[in-house]
Length: 117
Image 1 (cartoon, rainbow, N blue to C red):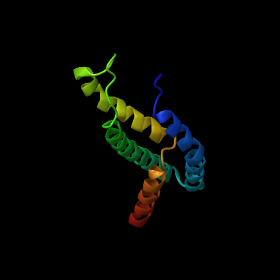
Image 2: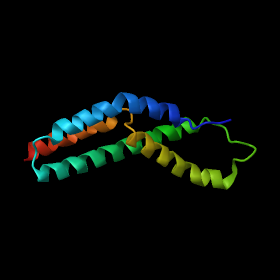
Image 3: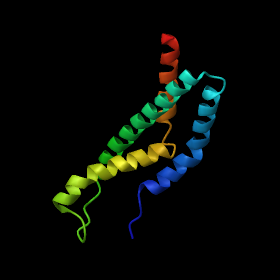
């Protein structure tokens, strides 16, 4: 029985990074004007999108070594839909806390926004 390969990674990422992400968001959002909050939300969304893309690329390299399921897999359908599946895996991992890339990117985006103001 095959299980979802990201399940273990997602649960580890959730336990180790979710608290840090929530603390970072609470610290940066407290006491800021509503215009700054919109920038924070946009920064967080951009950072999560970047991490999702990065994770999708990493999953693509990881799945290159995985053989095709001869019973139900293979063929043109699998070749066509596997990149979409890996994109969704990347989005899921990033949404659940990821590996910490989004936090770093978000801090960098915020510091760059503060320098321009």
